[in-house]
Image (cartoon, rainbow, N blue to C red):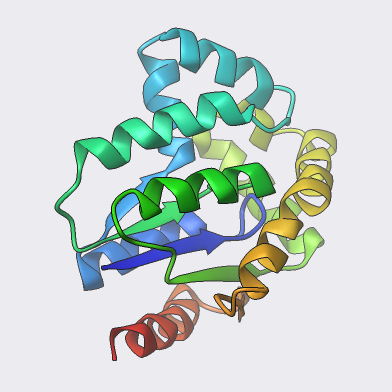
Length: 192
């Protein structure tokens, strides 16, 4: 089984690329953003708690995120592989994910980080905000705070998996197809 972490700042293209990887490799895409939107849309206690943080451009606490993720993995035990999108974001989440997979006699195959400059992220998110309906995509100050939080709190995740020889930076600029080709090359190397 191939277990990928698709990693990068908000607006780096993780969701777009994950969809293309799912189509090509038949992996299950687990997006914390999608999990949050489902929980928020259903007005669950976890969803309401997540929304209060997201509206301020802050990260959702580990306990909320890990609970949602565990439920999703346990509901889909027989897939070809997983693409984790938006998780893990902290070292404790890395450890929790490693523990969850170890309980299934598995591990993370690779973390692939989409590397995109901050100004490009801001531009992409402001553009996405025109149609996404997300309050956190409409305000440049909130977006820049999200980027700062990402850099401060989540960039150590890359180092965590790099220390295990399982992290690579992928150029996140260019056409969607160019970026996908770069990602596919890395996934193909894992299948050998």
